[in-house]
Structure formats: structure tokens, C-alpha cells
Image (cartoon, rainbow, N blue to C red; front, side, top):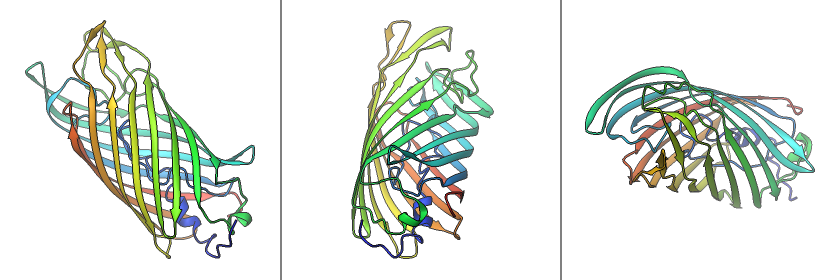
Length: 309
């Protein structure tokens, strides 16, 4: 490791990214810079966030809707802890979103309206950096300077959110999902280039709208980020994601809802003091084959403790 005199000060910068996508209400379309950055072991993070979306359904992009005019407001509470797994840095996080949704859309040529509030599906994730980010104490982290990091994660979404089989639009999905992902992060001075590739697998929803069983093919996604870090600990990113697949089946009848969607966004994070930081972010759908594009803005506050802080 090369000497980095600003290592301790950069804790504020790194802390802003431990749950980069925690307050995003959509799991398949979330954009998350700095997901595989390093941090000292034993540090805990408490995150409170808010996100607002307008346009399509952000919680389930494969719903058979047209002309959506829907909004969601999500308040999210999350927790993360940095771990030492066999000498490698790792993070475990859990995210619990509380969401309100309102608006209208067309289904089978008929208008429908929805106004609902409740819990969306919670998410759990374990990520491990296999290369370039060893498990370090706070003192050791002061000398750490990133070069190339390679990591992987598994995120699980549990069917604990609000769901009513008599309604098409819900906050929960009444099924499990499993999202393995690999990520690469390369530092080039104050610039960092990142890329991730993931696939989301879904279990069946046996109580979908109309009493049918809904199955969904895997959804494949990639992300890219260009990040610049300032000396003050502030960092900004330009973000993009593409996802494809996810075609659904209703009682063995295959739907014409293959997803091929692009999103772009930007992120700005800055430290407040040694234990607190704030992140602002936004993203927008550029192209959506199935009409499930939406705009998103949000912010997150993060408090950290433990690990010698």
C-alpha cells in the first residue's frame, strides 16, 4: 500500500457510498456508484433517505401498463456494517423502504387509478472485495490508496411488501428475487472508473392479478460510472445503466414485454463532519421498450460509528 496522508479524512468520502443505491425504490433499475469501495472493518452505517419518482412503475418494470402517470415517494431506513471475511473487506446491508404511490395508467385500453401507502419489499445484500481492497483497521486504512478493486455481491429481495392480488399495481411483488453481481473499480488519480454486471432471478408469484401465476425470465443489467473525488472529500459521478430480459409468463402464456431499457444519472456526495455525510442523486429513463421509464430524484443522510471512530 502506498502512503495516503488523507486516508482518515477520506472516510467521509467513502462513507457516502457504502449504500449508494439504498434509497432508490427500484431494484432492477437502481444506479449505484462506489458500491465496491473499501472502508475500515467494524464501521457501522445508519442511512435515512428519501426518493421521488414520476412516470412509470418503479417497483415493477414489467407490469403491462401503458400511458403511466404515477408518482412514488419513498422513505428508506438502512443499516450497513463493514466486515472482515478471510482477510477481504466485505459489507452487509439491509434496506427497508416505506412508499406511497398514486396516479393513473391504462390497462387493456381501460384507465385505472391507484393510491396506496405501505412497505415495499426489503432487500438484504452481502458484498465482498476479492482483489485490491483488504480488510483494514481504521489505523491501517490511513495508509490505503485504491488502485484496482474487483468484488462481487448477492442481493436478496423478500416478499414482505404490501400486495393485493385483486389490484394490478402494488408496492410489493409477492415473490423472492436474487441478484448476483460482479464489479470492477479502477482509480486513476482523482478519477475512478467503475463497471458492474448483474442478473436478477425471480421466483413465481402464484397470486398475481386475476388469480394467475406469473413467472419472469432473468433480467440482465450493466452499470458504468465516471467519478471525480475532490480534496475536500466531496465526490461527483456520472452514471448509466442498461438492462434487458425479464420477459413474463402468465399461466404459461408468454407476454410481449421483453425489457431493453437505458437510464442515465448523476450523483453528488459530501461530508458534513467526521460522522455524517449527505448524498444527492437523480436519474432518468432515456429509452424503454416496455414504457416503464421514470424520472428519479433523491437524497440520503448517513451516520457512522464503530471501528475505532
